[in-house]
Amino acid sequence: MSTIRTVCVYCGSSAGTDPAFINAARRFGEILASEQVGLVYGGGVRGMMGAVASSVLEHGGHVTGIIPEFLKSKEGIQSAAQEIIITPDMHVRKRTMFDRADAFVALPGGIGTLEELVEQMTWAQLGRHKKPILILNISQFWDPLCALLEHMQRLEFVRTFSLLVAATPEEILPKLRAAAARVSEKDRAGARETVERL
Image (cartoon, rainbow, N blue to C red; front, side, top):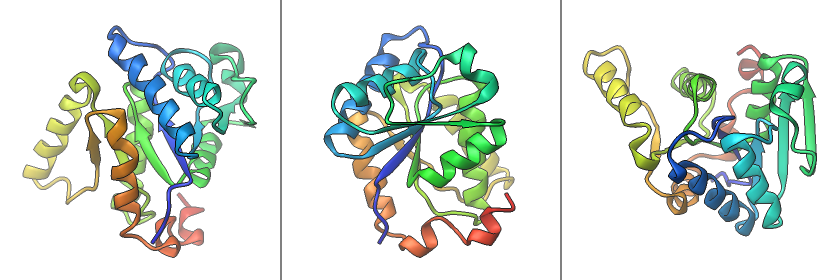
């Protein structure tokens, strides 16, 4: 049985137009801190990213920010985070986020958020890891993606996929923990030699 000690959160560097998005990010940050689950995220101070990280810190939680050198001035750095890792590029950033996380959660965001989420789903489908992946479907933000995945599955372009869906921030950790409990620590992160070749 594996445990959830850290969660990697993918989300937008913008706030979006619906206040429910930022409110959900702040609430999830509060929950992470109260449950003593560390946040791993993109390191920025703006938008959804800034909201979730600031909330974790305000409630006494631990934050690891991982940001590539070229984004430091564009997105800013959450200087209050207990750990900041500067990477040379996006590839190293994503790999470091993978290594530091026990599970992945996608909040509303843009193309970068979608790309990070789909990459983790791809790695899982290819058998590279068994870490839980979840989307927080606030205000039905992810409905179009869910419909597309179901469409791909009906047409047999996608085999079965494990994508957890939560409607509220309160549902996230229970769903992640239940999924993690079905996987051993050894199997969770995949074989080191295969993960290194991703």
